[in-house]
Image (cartoon, rainbow over all chains, first blue to last red):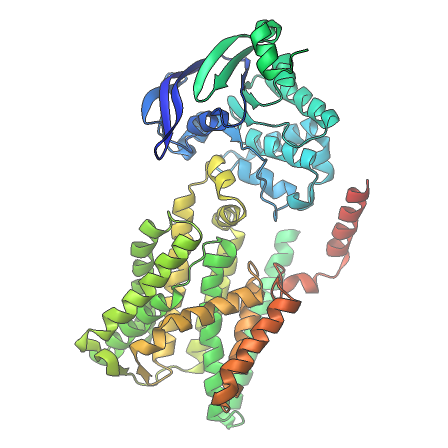
Length: 235
Length: 324
């Protein structure tokens, strides 16, 4: 579905991604784990068009999308839940979701998706008219995910959905991610909480200072000694 | 239901505005309002247009532009050339002034709106200064001594321009485009990630804002008998900025209210030139200390009239939810 081939991304002189390649197949949950500053978010931003790679290619469903503007990438079916949620604080929950469907014209489909999202996140239905800035962190994360889903993506990019959330909420969020995946949306999940991420993912990539250093089935990686020591707290 | 209420509110305000306009016209004709007050009224109207147009750029789209006097200058000079040099009628001058300022907005907006925050502020400030210097050095428009302009402004033209400005900007704000602009103000990265073409919408808001600043420029030129480059210095830009900030960033009614209040204050302080700036500054400092969110915050004046069940019920529900 998505094929990333040897991309290099720079922030000015800083070489942030050094020849990263990865594959995502239809229907999978793939997770990208790594420490702070490893280049996880950079990779997601490059995929969603917020950053442009200097070299390398990104092919989504047979189409080259590297360096294309975000509008086009969202239209093609990739949508991103940005790190730190970034909800539109002075807008209501409903208005936030509406903006998620900004590029869509099919009113009927949008209405259906509203219902689907309220079913997936009943909390959001309860707080439909509330300003999203007054929501709790967990609710804002749900809203950010719902907003991204309103674009009806085939590939959903999640940037650290567990950030700053209580363990119980993290569990709920991850359950919802699995549910979203079951409805047919492919997921690329970027996480620092490697344990949680590996527990729901099919496959995983490990990124370190801008390079992919390990990849494989999620179960195998979580069993590997090296990974356990480096990312899972070796005990 | 919601739409119906809006429509009702809209026609209600139009009727109110017409009644107000007619009453004031009678007062002017009857001589109850002496020229001093009429002049103050015209200044208020022009400042309302300026405040509303900058509100769209700063309050709605969140682009910190402090070069609004540049567009005002373009509008003023273009309209003056059209009526004084070409001898065309005043309405043509108003439209041409708006169009010229909009073109200037487009030319300056496309490169600078890629900048953010401080950089955009400096770039727009630079634009306004450049416009001032340009007019200072063109002999055709009188250079430093300025250009004399006939007093063509009349109350009906003024009130019509004010009303049209407010209607268009409010409608724009409530449209899908307006939503996109607000989302840019709220969080540009998220707006980008939603597939909103942020540059396009920033330029759009900037051009519409510039258009109305140009209209205000035409009215300004035909109100003050003379226009000089010094009228359009950066202090003028700050005056307009203050309307928007003082009214409450994001509130149209706030910007309009602040424009009215501050124009009245500065008109009456004109009698005490020595202390004028001191008092004006004190008002601003007091305001920022005691009400930093501005006169209206982000609220609109209409929200005070919706004291019925819907508004109150909504807030009660919200409270309940946070407790639960």
